[in-house]
Image (cartoon, rainbow, N blue to C red; front, side, top):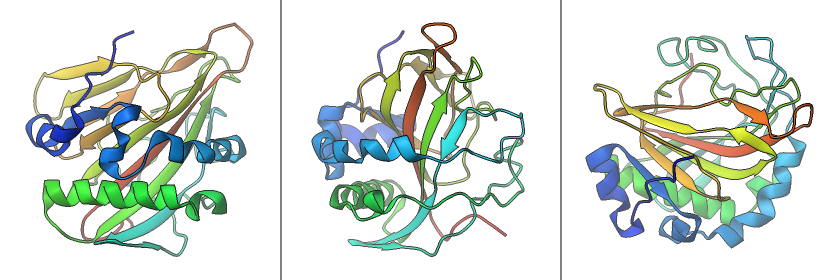
Length: 242
């Protein structure tokens, strides 16, 4: 396994501008206005994720919830629940359909640490793209190995059609695989590494890079393992959707 190419938190925006990606170690999260210790109480929320009923590959390995917010300066507002939608250009497997997921747990929505994380990411997006309101979608995921293999990104290497993507590792349990891969959207350059520590955060300028995560398998055949992540996207101008 390759260690992540850690980013100096003082150079977070600079790294995103130069390279289109940055990887924050858990100890560096305060640059976003929150600490790993403050986020830890949210971990039990990943034990209560409903199955994803929209997987077109017939799999039963993905569990998730979904919520939407708007960050405008220091104001963060929970939005009425809505469908998650992506165009086929960005998600050839699941694009073009309205996917209605169960809303985020109230424990998560009401957490001061949660609000601090979203506001911190909005500040990064504004430093990168210009000050403006940010339309945020949050997706807690669990990918498991009940069927022998789990696919974090069944659509393959992709962009999300947003401005900034944050992928935070929440935990890994008895699995192998799950390597993160980030590629220049317009050239051959790329990185590959494995996030192992809870609250490691990968930030991506979605216009400049594509990303994927390799499948996971159980460490012991027949045993259930899982990989928990939090994916947060920030988009200017409005939410995606018809």
